[in-house]
Length: 91
Image (tube, rainbow, N blue to C red; front, side, top):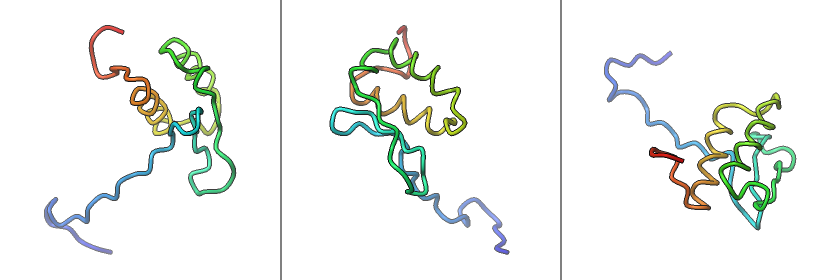
């Protein structure tokens, strides 16, 4: 087992591959991070407003495979695609 004396001794953290992305008119959710199976696809017209996206988040929250990282990536992918400001201010 490796021993680290300072934070500088720790190996760098590998960047995480996002679990959600916009591609070809759909939001793709990688519900199989190991690479097995097809992504869960949602047409962009079904999540093209914050209100619609929130309804989908509520629906997805009931799925056993929908966790914190996927939730964050869902929000990040849609906010980047549609230009939503999710980091502050009134909605």
